[in-house]
Length: 82
Image (cartoon, rainbow, N blue to C red; front, side, top):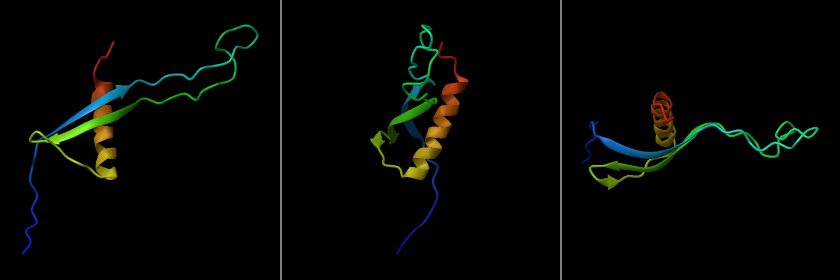
């Protein structure tokens, strides 16, 4: 026999927020950082450190990870980190 049902469970997501940053630039005419890029710019993003349900770490698939990253990024950008 098989039972398929949906449950509402509380999960705890721990993540690290990384602000957008400008990659290193070469100098141009003696002006530091005004030249061509030496490193690419990096968009803001989050790294999910763990996902827990009832105190136990759970595994999530790529689609769930993407959705949680979006939610965490929204939460992080709504806060004032300054």
